[in-house]
Length: 277
Length: 310
Image (cartoon, chains in turn yellow, purple):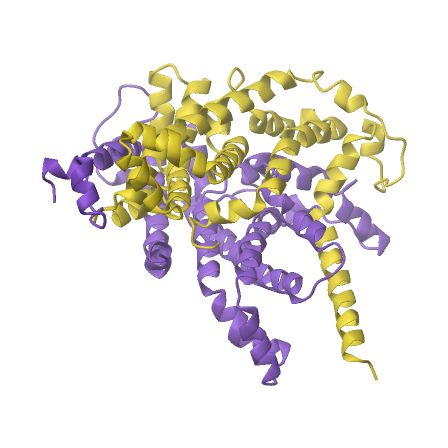
């Protein structure tokens, strides 16, 4: 007969083994990508796939060979950061007034904002494409910055709103009593308190912008193309350089993966529009 | 309530509780940029789409922009591609939702069932695919997993003496469902796991003391607790799954034939490959209507939950 403690331990062992097995299967493609990026092109294409090989950093050293990797990476950074900052500038005041000066329209406005996310991008692909063409914004970073700001705005407003909602109104009242203007109240009191929440909101926005692959594929060709487009260019048959593709992909995903790991708890809140804590 | 005197500190000090709609002006002023931009973002392109959908408009034949009424819709809907496109869209959204919700509930229940060695690492590994950009995950699966010669699956098939399968050529939609599920299952796990942690442990313990088995606890306690998070997962995933694009673009290009074309990809081919703006716009509007039907149903289901939490 097993004692209670022993059966608990056995249970934990079985559950642990099962969980590790599932995690290994789900994570395998990413692991395999990193492994392939350390192979030579010949090893990468070998059958059967090789687990043991002499690792090489060659692919990373020659990352610029096939295309100008750093130009694409720079576009990704510039577009994601600009769109995120712009989005925060719009979202913080909106969330501030909705969280602390609630009117009977607030809830409806919030739901309406969410509903704009329901508009599938293909529904407006043609006009946006033609407008971009008209204004000479095809293949420009500005077009992507504007679009990313707008498509992420609802999520960001929601997320900032839920963070602000947790802050006691009394603290702001106190600042107001001391004669602070609205501007001072936001910058000197509210933002420092909500620092953590705002940081994870920005992280979420960066992740969404970095990985966006509908508008970046349709509106850019070379000059403004971010990493998503660079990776997509490897899908053509002439791009059978798997080791290099893996190296490029690994570099493109690594920063976001690390951001994601750091902020997983907060992401839940943002991605569920505050409904799950 | 709106008298100017309210804004003076003295008046506030005398009525400390009355902080409801005071200072309405800044509130309205601060929300309006976001609202105005989103309104423009919705109305202008959508209006243009409606207009384009009613005229003949092909970029290859400039100047022939007659009003044609609903002809574009008629052509789009009666085209053979539309039926398979709509069918594939439903199949894709439905299957991925089913896979990610069912497996998501089971996996997160497993992770929360007991403490075990390296649970934090397992968590991180499980949610990782969600952060991989769509073009990378599509090519990763295409070249390293599904490839009929040197992919991992081919090696496994060969190990068991079976003929390797050319997944993307013979089962294109199934393959894309696999790729997209791999991206979205982690999202479900992430949300559901967090939700499960907020489940009242004492309640669970009480149920256990009353003689409830693990399955009974899961069925009567955990699952009802998960109703709202599951609704959230379904809503968010539906939004994104209706417009899956990059995964198809980089793997099968919708083929062979229309076997793996969804509505988003179909509209893209109409607009930017065949330059038929009129048809593409009609298709776009149909996609909008479908998305809105889904949205209305879903918002009805959980919209109340989202705002009434405080």
